[in-house]
Amino acid sequence: MGCGALALFILNPQRTPSPSVVEQELPNTKAVGSAAVTQAATVVAETPAEPEIDPAALLLDRERAENRLGGFLEKKQELDRNGVLEWGDREYAAVLALSKTADQAFLREDYPGAVTAYEEAIAKSDALLSRIPEALTELLEAGKTALAQTQGELAKRKFQAALDIDPDLKSAAEGLQRSKTIERVESLMKSGADDEIEEQYALAITDYQEAAQLDPHHPAAAAAVTRVGERIRETKFRQLMTEALRAIETEELSAAEAMLIEAKSLYPGSAEVKDASFRVVEARRLIRIRELIELAREAETTENWKKANDGYRKILEIDPLITEAVTGSGRTETRIRLLGQMKYCLDHRDELHTEKTRAHAVMILSEAKDVGGKEMQWLHDVSAFEDAVVAATTPVPVVIESDGQTSVDVYRVGRFGTFVSKDLSLLPGTYTVVGHRKGYKDVRRKLIVDPGSESVQTTVTCRERI
Image (tube, rainbow, N blue to C red; front, side):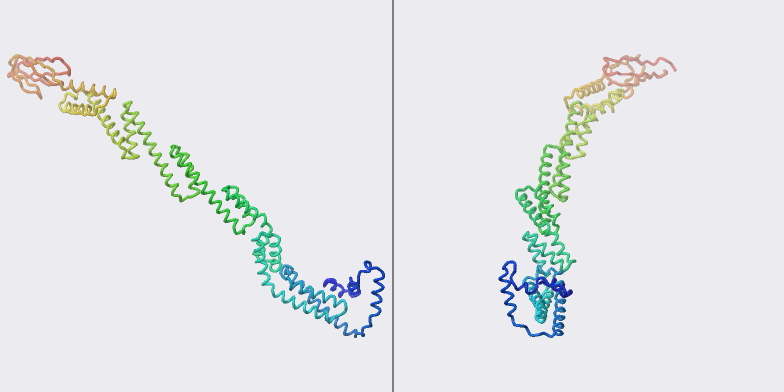
């Protein structure tokens, strides 16, 4: 009879205990047969009668035994509440054996024997209860070991027992939660490790992430996610950098910039990204310079000197050391200046008839010839200007006739006195010829010498008396 049944019997003494002491000690009558029953009855009948027992003393012993039983049951309930089955081991088995011995003695009405057994059971129970703090530590360690060995069911039992002792123990609650998924987590970790070895990082991180989600406290899952994530990031970075550099070489600079922006998001402080970005800027600069040089050259071939000069100047704004731009800018600026000066002279030909302007025009022509060039329009413009300069600097025969009595002066040329006819050689221009004669009014004539004229003739004679 167990402690629970015995307790019910004590509470209700009119109830027949089941099974009785006799039934426990005698063989099963159904199994053995009637002969065995008869033999057993004869043995009982021949047993000498026990001495009479004082009812009062028996009642007192029974009460003491019941008291010890109640005390033991309280201890046992406390042990059960603290998960003693997971940590009590042999000590708890000894307690149960003593309680069984006590129960049997109680049923035989051997109350002193029951008291002794119950007291021993209580003492051993107290010893077990004193071990609870130590048992709690052992349960936690056993649970951790079971988790490390992927023994989920064992870990569950250990952590549950720990929670029976201390329901608020966070580490035990976490361990119990981990024990429910440890087999699945370890399977995912193994699968992830295999994929990682094969460099199948996308598959590996999927397994590791699921493992980390199932078990946030797994000692390796989070680290594996970080490790493989870093490898994925590094692999992606290397791929982006390789493609970006290739795009720079093929001058696909917009695509290169997009890849470098993505690469920079992976490693913001990367020196490689900075260097490649500088190469993109440099490539754009060189491409722009090349485009401007081509445009400037084309403009020169079409004798659009202004457009060509603008192109060279833009190049110099980008890089003032580009030799072709330096020389091209100087060359086109000279053309623009000379063409402007020649055009002005051609548009104001009368000014070529002044000594200062003629001298300047000669210098312009000399510089234009030194510049050289085989461009059709340029050659035409220089030639036209040269014709104008030659004409302006070529003297024209001039004949001045007089009466031999009038003194003739040609301003800015000279005083020629009196003559009948005077041959001069004058540069094209407008001259003032004045005649003087004593007693006569002066005569003033405007002499226009056109360039290219075969000869110019005028008469200067004072005829009107004063």
